Image (cartoon, rainbow, N blue to C red; front, top):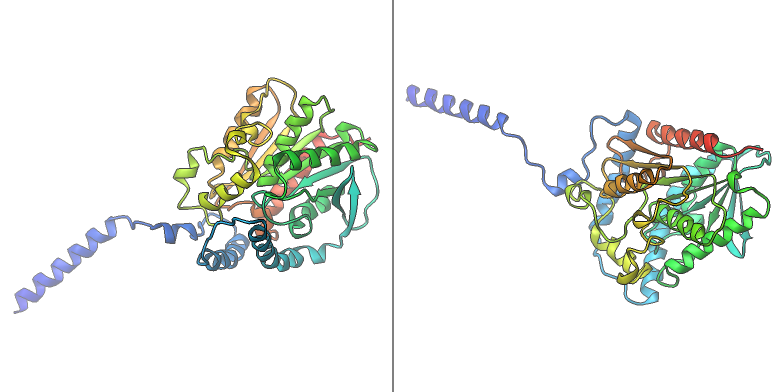
Length: 350
């Protein structure tokens, strides 16, 4: 009996040893919300809260909107959820935020505390897959940029799809830009956008270039949705690791924004643009936990292929537009500081 017990113990020990050598297979469910040990302590704490929230959101039934009312209700729900988060992250910044109309387009004028007018303006386009949010519910990124740069940021409240489309949105961004051109030289204007807003800014700049409109001095694209056709290696390789984006709901937005025949139009998906012609210096930022990483790399390579200045700045373990999700972290502070320095390098101050 004792011999059998000894054999059993040996067998169990051997099995445990083998098991310890076999890597744990991470399922999509566990990988999606796993926080890497390589992020900052502050980011870890903030992401734990954000991922808990995203996990709950992912459990809700996902039904494709059909009517305009469906889209409006979806946006209202998303805005109601994100609104308090945006308010919490911007209330203490001492901003002056005013509704205005620039170039015939509704905008928010966002000024940092103690703002002293100077000869520079930044223009921002918000994200949301072209179908969600507004300038008001997307205040975090332009607020951080206003504080870091000392500049006024004009946030374009473009018409969401399907009420509008890519023609509408790019025309509105260009109209706002032309409105600012009335008081600024092109090199005194920078443009920025996150996610869909990043794609919109780049697409609008290609469109204004083809219309012989003088180009802005520099662009800052945060996690840009630079190709809405779901093309790119990381749409597959990082599909199970991205905590916020999924191809299904992205396609709903893409199809609402542009017909299939138009989705490779450079004004829609700027990775397909002609960069042998003029294009402003561009800073592209993103995180390593995004299915859009291929978008960042391809957009960077496209701009560089034309001989233009571009910088690709990636952040370890960060999710999509992390600057808006976890604003009070070293990663966000570093990224925004980098963007402010980029604008200082390429924009005229006088």
